[in-house]
Length: 138
Image (cartoon, rainbow, N blue to C red):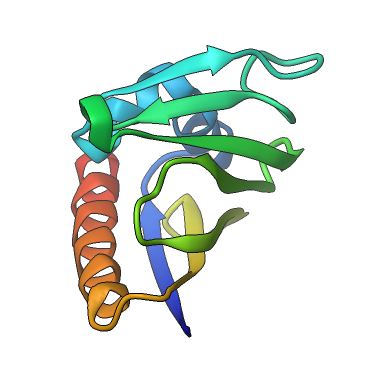
């Protein structure tokens, strides 16, 4: 299996707290990513916090992600906990910081795929989708 890494950095003309609030809210994330997203389990202490689970996608192709760590206005870590098809060991991290324009998000995703050519295809699709989504709120 070959590990794939996606690294996307996007600047926003909005305060860090505003961008964090949008990207940490499972029920708002679908508007950014352009796919259905809904929270299926609340986190401990915060509905979108550690232990919360969101369902992304359509029907049998949907997957679930579990939030594994949150530092408000600083970072969100998550992993695919159900589904994902030929993708294995998928984890992601969003890091939030201030920038000269307002704020910056650095989104990193790592995953493996045992199926040849699937990794690079998934990487290209995810990269394009996330970049377009982040530009919607930039």
